[in-house]
Amino acid sequence: MASYKKILLCYDGSREGRKALRCGADLALDLQAETHLLSVVDMRSTIAQSAGLLTDVACGRFEETAREILQEGVDWLTERGVRAQGHFAFGHPIDEIANLANEIQADLVVVGHRCRTGLSRWWMGAGTTPLLDRVSCSILVACSSAAEEKQQQAAA
Image (cartoon, rainbow, N blue to C red; front, side, top):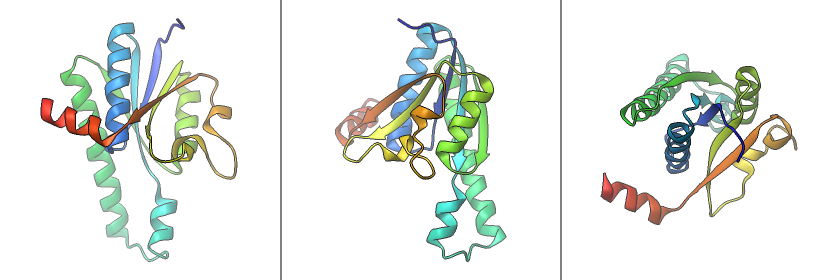
């Protein structure tokens, strides 16, 4: 098995993000790996959806929500014994994941994936540049289903 000493977890508060967080936390604990958690605000899609009519207040609210999600993830990891450094970024998720993974020289990136849709959410960046071609480390794709989420909620 590869030795993963530095793990980057990508978390957005979604069901898929929670699955990535759980899988990444388990690995980080087992491997005693240095752990980083990234939350990204993708303003491009938000601005496009609002036809460019976002106010500064609305933009500030998106940032505040993303920082809360990041803190939620860091707190969740801490409760389970994983010390993680939180990172926050504005931009396209693929770009920001690749940038941080390369900057911290991650050995592994953990992303979530909704099994009923294509992998394009995390794997495809601007144009046709996949995440796989933008990082020089392994990628773990944690798949999540609605049934699994219900089990996790019932156990909590």
